[in-house]
Image 1 (cartoon, rainbow, N blue to C red):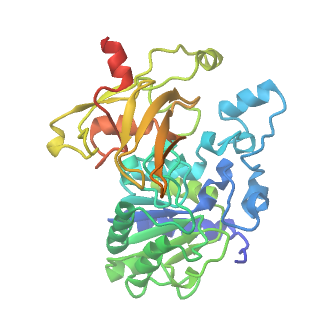
Image 2: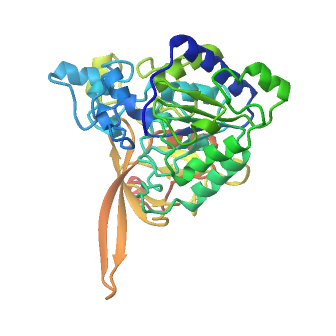
Image 3: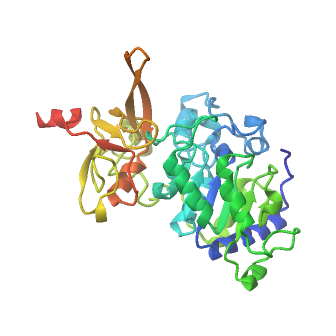
Length: 412
């Protein structure tokens, strides 16, 4: 696919005004994000041939996440604290430690303002949730690094049946789909964009650069607003979109935040971002980092009372009955969904960002009947426990196994 030159500031601002009006009118808006959303956060865009040499990377001076520009201890400290620009992308040491870009923060702000009905994420990076996007609005259709029950799906693999069912629900009910950072090159999940575009009320389809207007939309009493595509890369669905914006995602999101008067949080302000944020009651950084930022570490919380069944991880009726979710080091948990549903895992502590590390035990039985066991470390995002306590999730990815090691050792 070829790239389109970024649109002038006047054209861009005018189109973002239209986008803001579409969000005000939409009742079930869906965000559909591809790899391009995370490129300015330092996560490599594997979906384009240009990769780290893409137009966006050159514009934002973003390095590939497997490298770092840090040459001194102060550089590394700056990277950890969010230096190197808004997201510190040029100094990301690992994609697992990447911090959200402006686009992620604005989308999270859209959700807080009630402008996101569902977020379908092709990426695996957990950056929307790190920015404060509620997990219960997320559909990580291709797998998630911070959901141990949802491993990354290979190109030749099968989508999780429950996530695909939710995708179909989004396809059927979305009245507006904003596609950001995706080439729309034929993934099964692209259907949510094409279907919404095909159902757009006549008169909303863009026949020319000045045809679509908010006034036209209001006069038509539109019920389905169609698709909006934001990227520099041309896509096969451009002609069918209601609005096409050729610009950097962060630039569009910055203007959209202004138009909708959103309160946007950043990576270093320590502002709360809703119930899904990791807060002081759940995790604080290492004492050395606390010393650097002038804080004091208190006791982390690893045991939670949550309204979810210990047998299958489903939310209890009316959230009336609560059970213990023990994520202390050494605790045993069970995966409740995905291709390894029912497999056991052991909590091995937290990583530097406060996400729990789980060592999942896999069992393979050969044709001869021999059993082989091997372990794999997966992460559980810190936001899962916080949102589980509130009961907004339909299910949780892990449950505590009765008699787990951590609980047993404390009782002894």
